[in-house]
Amino acid sequence: MRVLLVLLPVLMLGACDVEAVQAKYRERQAAIDPMRLWSVEVVPAQAGVNAVKICADSRISEGLDRPAVTAGTSYCKPFGDEVMAGKARIQRCELDGKTWVATAAVRGDRTRDFLALQSVEPVDGGQGYRQTRRYRLLGDCPEGWNIGDTTDQQGRRVKGGSPLLALIGR
Image 1 (cartoon, rainbow, N blue to C red):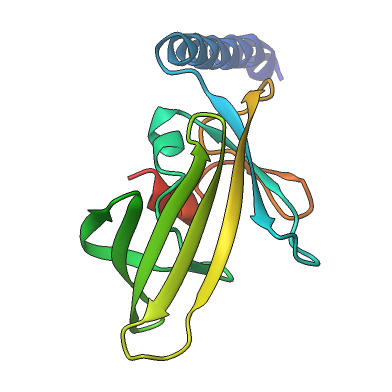
Image 2: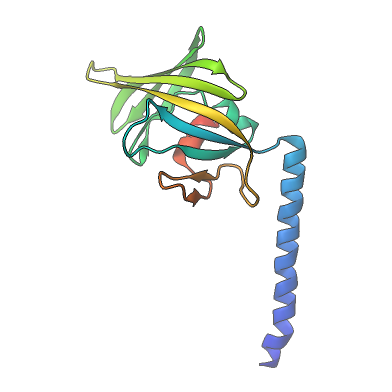
């Protein structure tokens, strides 16, 4: 019991140091590359598909207009070089053993409110799909959020690590 009484304050001090280091890191990050909160929604609205929010640094923000193809929890893994054709980005990717060509073109103010028109087609000539996503800058990320934190379709916060963010933030 005495050991616990001696160790408990030491452990609590260690936890305070971790929190202080994390706070200092967030301060430095905000001064160098402020985190900004973006809303992402499908246009026109689709039943059951809600807007999500992304806490992004400049690396993620700059990638929001990249082709980012997902199917459920899987995502299309890019390979080869991305090609720019005017305002469109074109990227080959692999999903479920098939090769696809993904394209994204942007309309609007890329710094605060824009549309990313995305399409994906399999190279074997099968059926693809098109989707338009609207990205709106909402302001600063909420207190306690980190780069890469998002909300899910129900509006619940999801801590970073999304495969989709890995695609757009490369």
